[in-house]
Image (cartoon, rainbow, N blue to C red):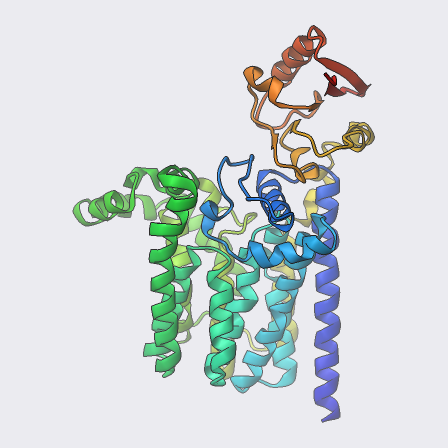
Length: 463
């Protein structure tokens, strides 16, 4: 009993340290002005919900639910009622990813592994590069689905119906497309895990939510444009709607094969699986049925971001990779068997593919006028509308109107205009912003309130 408590205490310390590292990493990246539009979108939407306002995002131009039907944003808004801060999102994200180690540990024990092996598998989970990299990719509710999926499998195996249903609902609330992962998990539970009741629940709820989200919620809150602009454009070679895609898939399968069997896809699969190859024996890879929708969507996409392990698109595959590792370890058939060797391999994979090195290179690019940018932000005293650059936007999203989309004709819509000429971001060039500054200096409606190190703040004069 004492040894069991000791292992749990060690796991608690590991989870706590991991959560702190993840939180510090994402917060530091944000403070160094490397956050972008996704964080701004979620922060603005959750803030507006917390204030009892309709969460129509000025970042994407439509309701927050039109993005991915992620109703999880509404309970997250309760945190903003305590105090509105983007750091809540970093805390939720880091805790969710770190807490995935707990169901991982319990699943390993349930499969018959020793406590030392279960701790090792938890460490493998935490060292998986995609987990750390996703934490640095602004904020996405997908991270909450990772412990949710692991807990759902644990609940199914231990026959805890209430926990299973709660976990499934949590996963579905994070992103509409995760309904496909839930469906695949249901098929696996139904056919291979002998958990027919749990598999049926997952199969039914995943299918129902996919239909409801994509045919009713997303079109209702954002129109057909929301579905196309935020989702289907990544598969533009297949058509502009689900019906067109189905038609092309059936009538021209060669288009799919040409896209799937490409060098970029082979590279993606190699780096996705390399950190865990030691436990992927074919006869124990059945749990990867649950990862098929995630990996297939990434392979089918013709947008390179879907295959980038710096981003979060591969996260839903992680729980099922871990389950495959546990299965091979439990059978004694893993390619590597010694805990120390496995940890060493995972550490090498993390050092090779984890993007912590960005803190000494890419994330420092805005430091030459960092102080001036911070001062400019501090002078935005009210919640009036703001036009600024894309990297400053996530620092000023607690308002109804903020934009980084360059349009000289929209200037009168904004009370504050905050620009950084040295680091204009991707939405416009230094030349564009210099022209904008020249125009503002000739307009009597705006006053130059702050200028330092190529950072300019203009404020609209009161009537």
